[in-house]
Amino acid sequence: MYIDFHIHYLPNVVPEERILLEMDKYGIEKSVVLATPDHPRYTTLNLSGTNEKSRDLVSRHPDRLVMAAYIDPRNVMEAQTQIEQHYDKGVRFVKMWPGHGFSPDDPMIYPVWEKLNDLKMGVILHMGMLGVRPQVGTKVNRMAGMNAKFGHPVLLDQPARIFPDVTFIIAHTAYPWTLEALEMSFMFENIYIDFSCGLGYEAYNLIDRLHPGRLPWERFLFASDTGGNAGSFVERWSELMKEPFFAPYAEDFFYNNARKLMERLGAW
Ligand SMILES: [Zn+2]
Image 1 (cartoon, rainbow, N blue to C red):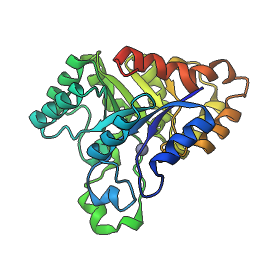
Image 2: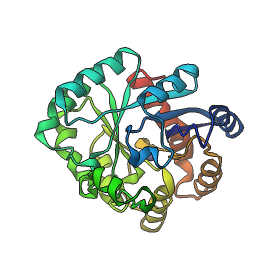
Image 3: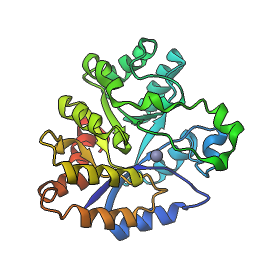
Image 4: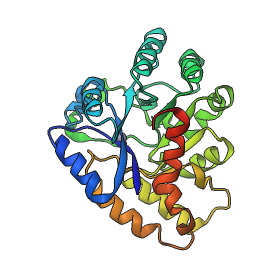
């Protein structure tokens, strides 16, 4: 059994039926649908699964899909209100992109962490590099205000200490700052790591070569970062996790860790 902790809704590319068919075919019990900003930086790439569309999708399949609402914390009070409204509809995870121009340890947004802490919610953060995406054009890229420096995992150090009831999930292993992410997660019980997209394989490669002693196996999450057609990720990761160093933790990685986290946050 698998839980895919990171998909997006791309209705123009991967229709709803295909998501469910693929999940059934590969034994994916649940997938977390991360809503994306309503901005050309995303819609140009067919990432049109905004909060509204993602909610519609998830509400049609509440037993299979879990919503993570997109929140920009910089309008602090508005963000708090949005979080509360999502929470009231059953949402237990939000998604944020620090790379759009805010640091997770900027005290200005601490009232937003406070809100998530009160509600004991999870936040999935895009961390690590941002990619270049020349196909969206210079203008759109510039308007998205991106800056990868905000994707350093160590920027979660103070928030993780001050807000222990927020569960922070570092997406894409924060590659290339993967060792930093591993250490942060090893130190803090409220920091998890998702191994999504091709960068997850790079993280696997690092772990396989270094065999670090300080690994938070119970906080590693399988994830694809696909439009829900995650079959190739299931197949490749299932092979990789047969390696003796990883094999004892395979079931936790694919399923148990995510399930326990969802149960704890009330998203199961
Ligand atoms: Zn993603």
